[in-house]
Length: 139
Image 1 (cartoon, rainbow, N blue to C red):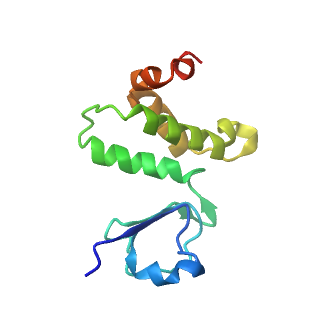
Image 2: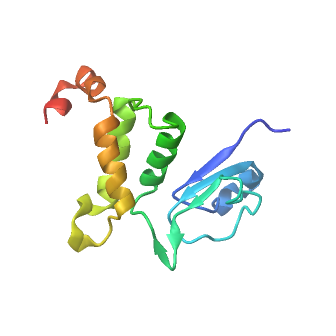
């Protein structure tokens, strides 16, 4: 048995040039319409998270889904663990980019994106960022 596994993020179908790796797909985290590929990865298993309902994405960013998964893993019962500064910064940056900074006129951001942004702001260990790059922390 092959010990390798692939999690698809921001896509729910492995590209055709990598089709030989398709059997290694064990998880999907995405916000595009489900293509129906990789049927062995099921919603019931908790490994197929596709935020697309009624012809529309329910989040602006797959990083919102990653944030939700991270928080589920990190804080069963809401114990308040801090998120690594670099990871928090990366997730937050992509969510803001994909949601067009949550500007209402853009029509991209959702309540889930807003919750992820707020939670990342509260739970990220920003002190780690200041140790790495004081100029980012002071911005």
